[in-house]
Length: 135
Image (cartoon, rainbow, N blue to C red; front, top):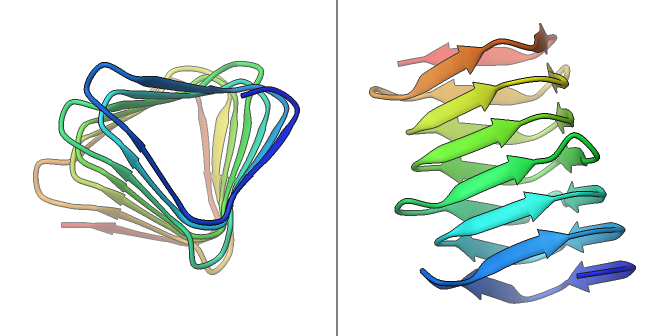
């Protein structure tokens, strides 16, 4: 998806589909990712919006990506971060949160909930100004 794109409803990627965003993307609805969602631009998950990273899905914030989460992200498999990932909302990790390069900033008032079986693999900058719950 190139240019400016806004989702106000529902997007689902199936097991053979891949979503790649370039430019400005705003999610005001629900995204169910079953394969791969790659961010190569400015991505905003708005307050009240949800991204479900399901099954064997991968969410990649590329080194060109700036990902701002104000809503909820639930990860069941793998999130890879190479760019700038700002968490202002809720990030629920039931899989692997892999901080390869770039930075993840958990801002004041934000929550990262790392559930049983969840792994945070940190090789990059991780700044926590919010709450981390490690179950």
